Structure formats: C-alpha cells, structure tokens
Image 1 (cartoon, helix red, strand yellow):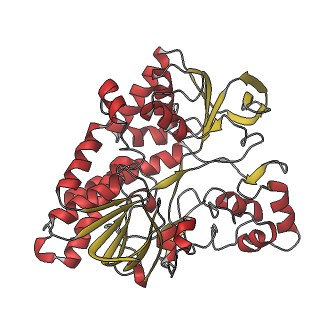
Image 2 (tube, rainbow, N blue to C red):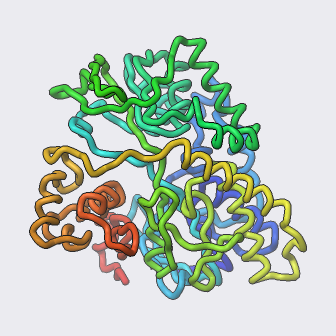
Image 3 (cartoon, one colour):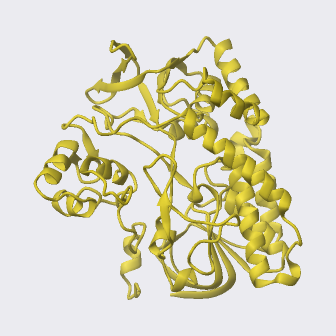
Length: 453
C-alpha cells in the first residue's frame, strides 16, 4: 500500500477543486489533488482529444488555462485515483488506482471535498430502453467527440442545462424533434423577473441559447413532460403529455431526459457532517459556513457538493474554502480580505435560489408500479410500494426487503426515488447511509495480499 502525506487533500478536479488547489499551492502548502477521471477538468472543463482540438479548437480555453496553472503551481496531481473511504475527520483518506487496483493511504492536515454532482434521472415507463440517455451524455458526445446522440432527438425534463445541450446537438447535425420543458421558466411571473434582472450575465447567456434555438426553428415547449418511451431494442417513439391532459406521440431515435443535478455528498456524510434538506426537499446537504467549513473540524466542502449553483459559484466556493484553509494552516500567508469573493458568492447563491424557483421538480409519487426504479437490482416502483405497505416503512428497511440501492451505484441513482416511494419521516428527506467503500473498488484491490481497512 502506498502511503503519503500532504498539508491538504483536494478531492475532485473540477472547477471548485482546481480553483482551490491553485490558491492553496500559491499559498505555499503541500497539496494533493485527487480525481477518479484520467484527466482534470470535471464535467465542465473536460477537454477534447488532441486531434479534435486541432480540428475544431479548444472546447473551453479557460479550463485548459486553469489546469495548466495548477500543474505549474506544483500541486501533486493524481488522476485515475478513487477516494473510496476516509476516517479521522478526513485526515486519513483511502484511495485506489482505478486501473491497477493499487491501494493507498494519504494523511492530511485538512481535506476539501469538491466531488461535484450527478445528473438527476426520474424513472418513467421505457426509461431503460437503449437510446434513452441523460442530457449530459448527449452533450459529452456532441462536444468531446463531435457525434450526435441520434439523428432525431427529443430533449425533455427541466432546468437551464437543456438549452446548451440542444444547441450543441444542433451544431453536430442532429434534428431536435421537441424540446420539452416541464415548467414555465421562459415566461416567469413578476416575482421571478426581478431576480432574473439582477443576474444580467446569466440572463444574457440564456438569451443567446434561446436565440440560437429560435433561428434553427426549435421552440421550447413549456408545461409538458415525457410520459413514456416506446421501442423494442431501441427507443422509437415518445409520449408527451400536455397540461390540458392531452398526449401526443413523436417518433425519435434518441431521448434525452434530465431534471437538473444532485450533489455528490457521500464523503462528507461518511465522515459525520451535519446535514440539512436542500431547497428542493429531496437531498441532504452538508451544513457549511460562508467559507465551506463543515461541522467536522478540518473538513471543507466546495462546489456543487455543497449545493447546485453552477460553474461560476463552484469556482468562487473553491477559492473561499482554500482561503479558509490557508488561514487555518498558514495564517501568515493568507489574504487579509476576501470580502469581494464573499459578495460574489452571495450573488451567485441568489441565482441558484432563482433557478430552484423557476425549475421545480415534479412529483415522484405517481410513478407507475411496473416502472423499474433501481436499475442495478431490477426493482420496480410497485415492489418498493408493496414493501413499504407491509411494514418496511423506512428507507433502509425497504432496501433490505427489496435490494433497491444495493447495486454498484449504492443508491446514488435511485435513493431519492426509493425515499419518495417509501414515505419520508417527519425529520425530513432520507438518503441511504454512506458506507465504505463509497464507490465500487476494482477487484484487483482485494487480491495480491492487499489489506483493505
């Protein structure tokens, strides 16, 4: 087992982790940056291959510049490294090489979790058909590989993320059969207009996307949702429900459905951070102060792991957490004032609150019984309801009775749906307990005499 030490471990090489690692390294601390992916950047700053970059240009030049700055600052970068456990308030991290399975242990004086988020998928009949994907997957194919997810695409769900995905698909030659938005964010009420006007940069960004779509003849169909997908070995048609109760069917060869993002909070919860429900009422978020400090001494959280607020907020939150760690470990090198960063963080948090109001989540209690909820273990909504009705009326009891949440994802994909179907306690939303290993370990990690703590 490889053992090492660092002043600070930053877990996650996305916008929050990169900004934090740069501030910490420039402050003179010994920093190790860990990411499960083979490349830095996270989902937002990920980079194309050299061949596609030469042909089409750098996808996000700011990300490339930031990654180069982090490399030049002397940060110990360990990509392809899974952090699967921790103890001692995060001062001991357990890692595994994602390719070889080689185990490692890192001792730190402080830890920053910048583990990002997952796309939120909500089950519906036919959602497991080939050709039904998340918007993020479609965006990855379009931007990284210059490949459309299908020739005729239906985009559906809710959230501002659907707009750039639609534009990216058009750019690589896909035809958008429909862009179906569950809510009415693009004709908001009076109370929301004021909040939007206070975010001119974000408002202009949305306007650019909408203008691009309008020029291509794509209309955002508001107040509608996907009811079901049909097909045998591939999705071929989609039922779209309207607010008046009518249903129309569209032919398609790709369906992209997403409902925003869910914070990846397993590591902070594993270490016992105090949590509270997020504004949507569906997640448990680590309780943090203005600088990202949690209730666990020496453990900080930044980026979407602390609540979904977008890439700009992630960068600011990462810098604030890094400055707080510097004040803790090297006060003589910490900046005297960070008031400007805090003001920007508050403004970006207000934008996140506005997005929560404009894009509320649908009711998940009406999922048909036959719909598969836990894809790993093949558990349907009806089986979960039956378990809850016969006495397994909490999340973990239902998990034991049905195996929902026991597959490779350990409930990261289905846990919030299982909780909704079983009924939540009065204390707020539930989520599956975080346990080690918080991610599946390679088989190689359990052989050749390696000792797993």
